[in-house]
Amino acid sequence: MKKLTDALKAVNKEINALSRKLDQLSKRADKLMKAAAAKKVKTKAAPKKKAAKKVKAAPAKKAVKKRAAKKAPAPKKETVKKTVKKAAKKPVGKPVVSATPTSKVLTFMKRYKKGISISKLKEKSSLNDKQISNILHRASKEGKIKRVARGVYQLA
Image (cartoon, rainbow, N blue to C red; front, side, top):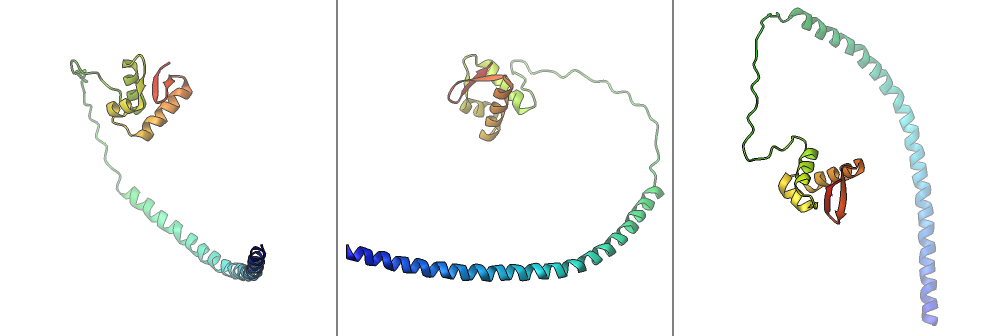
């Protein structure tokens, strides 16, 4: 028991010594911060003068650019072209998947009435985990889909 109390007293002395050192260091840091703040105040006045000179030089460059743009106007040609749009042929037997990732995921979910897992969605849509989780979260907030089980979703 005496050994324990002696050890505790020794630890207490070390803690007190460390707290004194910490106080000294914090006082030094405060002095340094005040000195740095005083230096910043003195140096801030000089850059403002330089900045004012830069602002005066900037409008001259803009005026030069505007003059150069006015010198070379592009001639306009009036031609009328008729374009005929042809209907795009859909491949037979293959489902057409929409362009956006959200619509991709929702079209895959239409095929699975009982629900589809995240891993199947990842395989089918070739999207990464983060994209799929964001799409599923957004769609569930909007009420388009519902969660059937853990990692399994179906259309609402």
